[in-house]
Amino acid sequence: MKNFLNLAAGVLLGLLVAWLLGLFRPGTTAPTDLGATPISVSSAPARPVIVTVAATRSDVVMPAASAVPAHAPAAAPATASGPPVPANSVRQQSRVKAMTNNLRVIGSAAQQFMGEKGVTQASYYDLVGTDTDNYVRSVSPVMGEDYSGIIVSQTDTQVMVVAPDGTMVTFDF
Image (cartoon, rainbow, N blue to C red; front, side, top):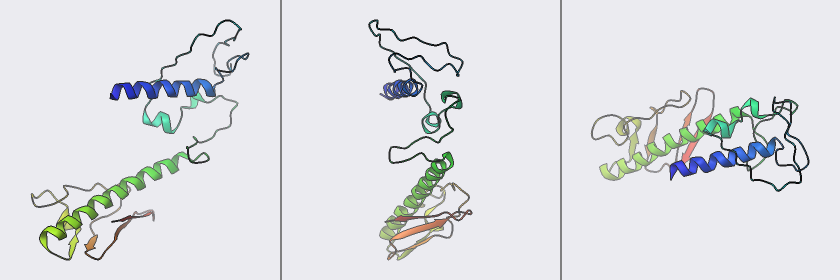
């Protein structure tokens, strides 16, 4: 099933690249500024064009420079929800998502710890470690943030961490 999904994603990405390069416009030729040979479109019966591209996550987020015609302005990839976003913004969103997941793990472990032990608060050191009674084996910092100061009380509804660059991430229970 995974191979089928990768193949389908590759075909769709290839078709998108072909469309962006103008290969599907009838009566025109392909752009020649990329070093490609012009393709004439005639009135002969059309044959389906199948383009297969091996796609990776980075190909989907940021197209390769060779896929963009030289005359086209340099622009960031567009998202489904709005205008183009800079690549560093996509990376930042990914990092924030990973930090949020770390907070979710710590918050969930704290609630389980307090429920099982009958205590009113749980610290990072009560939850994280390699001992058999710890709830979380490890938490990997994403941007150099420090989770070790987190203490979750029974009355808390959210946990928060601040990265060295000032990025503040919270997770609500």
